[in-house]
Image 1 (cartoon, rainbow, N blue to C red):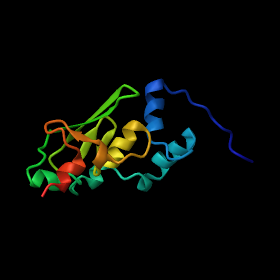
Image 2: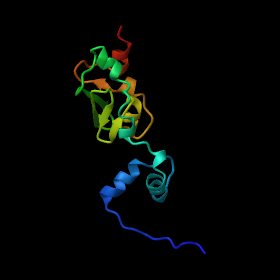
Image 3: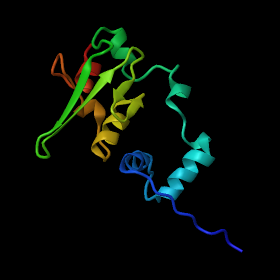
Image 4: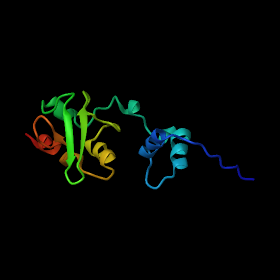
Length: 135
């Protein structure tokens, strides 16, 4: 005999947080099952925090500094996204901390995007790619 399906009510804020963790075409129940019952599939930021982020090399070369702001503007959609570079070279956004710039920006805009090409360093007006390619 199959177990009965139970329904729960959650508020909009909790549902929005749940949607942030959707992979592909997962249903809310699938997301909860993955997050709650199989924590190994979702590595925590703290587990990776000891590893330097991709921007650490730019910090070490003096091209970025901890606390610097990165910006991406979608002119047609009238949207602006910002992030902060932390001391270990991670990209910190309103959605979390990311080792690489592309996943950080992709999470914000909702689609795959080249963060090295699209994030602009606010102080210099240069893209991360331009900074990375400086010799």
